[in-house]
Amino acid sequence: MSPQSGRRARYAVVGTGARAEMFVRALVHDHADTAELVAFADVNQARMDAHNRWLSELGHPRVPTYHAGDFTAMLVKERVEVVLVTSVDVTHDEYVVAALEAGCDVVTEKPMTTDAPRCQRILDAVRRTGRRVTVAFNYRYNPLHEQMRRLLAEGAVGEIGSVHFEWLLDVRHGADYFRRWHRDKASSGGLMVHKASHHFDLVNWWLNATPVQVYAAGRLFFYGENGRRHGYARDYDRAHASPAADDDPFALRLAEHPRLRELYLDAEAEDGYHRDRNVFAPGVSIEDDMAVLATYSTGATMTYHLTAYAPWEGYRVMVNGSRGRLELEVTESDYVSPAAAGALKGAALHGDQAAAEGGSATLTLRPFWSPPQRIEVDGYTRHGHGGADARMTQVLFGGATDPLHRAASARDGALALLTGLAANRSFDTGAPVRVADLLTLD
Image (cartoon, rainbow, N blue to C red; front, side):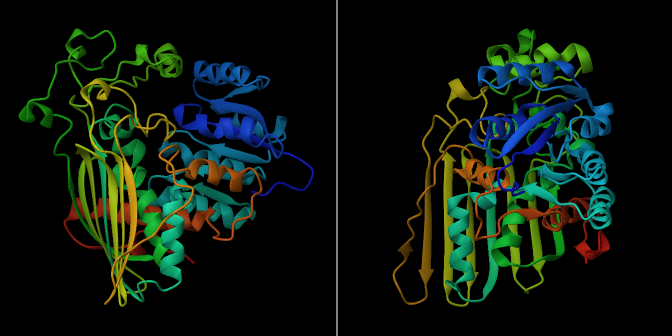
């Protein structure tokens, strides 16, 4: 979304929950010379009012607010050029397609959408209108991941045979998906779509390949009503004003977090949405332990595992090739302290809050017949998804040059989504799923 020389592009944000905060700050604070925030849209006025109050704290004037039902009228009245979509995942396609048909470009949070028909709607609208959709896969901009891309493209491990990718969400971060709307698979697509689309996109990008077939197994093992079997259950529906939640390390105390209180607790009267559900309450329809085996257009395979209830947070990636092996290990937090167990990390503030516990990152190249080589990476930080958020917004909103071509298109968004959708179908059928049977891409 490179702005034209000498002028600022006009942006509107639809969906003003916590996910919007990083983007709003980037627009009005970091890239105010190239971008102009002109409007908010949401189903909840209180949340838009909260963002407007925070704009005032940044010295920015309040912007007009519109109910989501007036989204199309807002685009016309405010002369919007680019729409930022940060709403509930299942609603993305509604706003993306309406924006494209109104002549706007779109930047959407990942995942691009939650199922194949909605994905097809977006792809069809891109073809029909000629407008652009960019999916905010910020992990492409992490310096560690950029360096992996360079090394693999340069042939550091030769022809790639396989990838092993393990992602661990700790019992603070992982639990947060089971408090929120994400716990409903119809709203989020489950963690295979909402969370793992980040990771599947990275593998597509690193391998310069597309997924062909997926076989997967997943279940709800730890959260939901399993909490009683494991000895963690407490008898309450939501944490606020519930004495039974007082000693629960999995409880989120909204009243203790001013910004979340303003966005959610103070906004409940309008839509009844509870941000602090009991993670062990009934009604969870997503998985928390998932294993995937995928094959790619190059012949490479990937084994992937996502655990949402780990004692530490981080990930390991191992790429095996004809000339050696590349290994990345990242520890984002080495444990969850009891004092911080019910606090927020990562997902809740979208990567802007660093963990108090220890962390580290190592990238190691292991060529055949040579000692391992530790690869030093400049620019990595434990804040903002490894420094990725700031680097991404520089490209999306600031017009920064991008020699790695990291801005993900609608097609990229579809390819990342397809691996997760195929995994979800494989969970249900117990059989391998060809991604071409879900959606055909040109």
